Length: 315
Length: 59
Image 1 (cartoon, chains in turn purple, blue):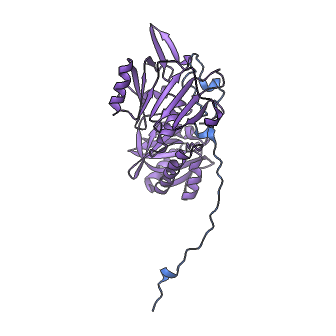
Image 2: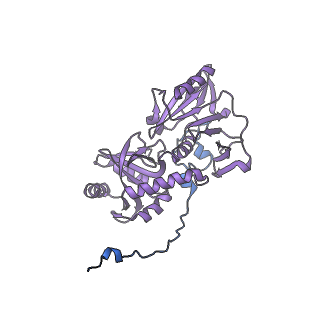
Image 3: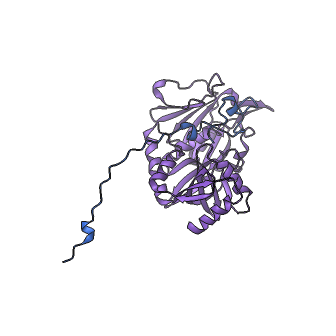
């Protein structure tokens, strides 16, 4: 079915393509123009597939014609970020308008169908460049568009995006959720610099997916201040809500407290009922199956030792 | 005859409590960005987060 859809598109015009793989979700970008990734953040390096797969989960098609019209009727608007993007809904289709205030018209308009598994991305001229007799398009499937697509795609497919650092050791994964300033990048750096054999999946954004009775955490290309992002995963064993403190301590918390805390850091598109229920059910299952703790830490040499001893003893 | 203690043990009703959780879009909905090189603004060498003055939020 997917191959046929691709073939139909390719027959219409000769296409270039690339694939991004984030949390085992393959986004295939197809374009009539050569696709350039030179303006893409370096943290994407691990997530761009060199061998372009024929199988995909999300098809992102760039049409031949440049962006000229876009939906801006207030009655269809679901959400306005207040800074750079907004979301509209007309019938069953969604429209993401990427329109930073510094520009006079939108940079990107993405029309999403079939619960965000098919996206058609119209690019403004700002995304196109002629070079060596070829027209290039700078890959529009990058922040923030890719993150917006993924949040909505995963909502009813047993997955969430969380504002959290995440680490792994021997296929065992641990989360460090926290709002801005909680210390995700600081703690991730300390773990990286320690002698303990943990790998940091991300210092800022993690995707969690449920497969059968297990929850898996995945690194994402949306790194934080430390720029830490690897395309690996691990089975989740513990959630440690981090806080800066005057000593290192880890305290178990009850499910209701964990649920309150996780609500602050999970990406929930609360403007659309159809996306909320799946995510709330997911969080409920996550909190009931995975032990949660508060991890108060101070910047000190022994913070990783305290954590390592705790997980070896308790989890 | 001994009474079955389990039968007599009733669960005390606890009135549900409503807790208000203030959600912040800039924390979770692809708004803020501290990543300096998160895609340069098209047609320039300036990161978009610098263009739209959002650096400092969201991570």
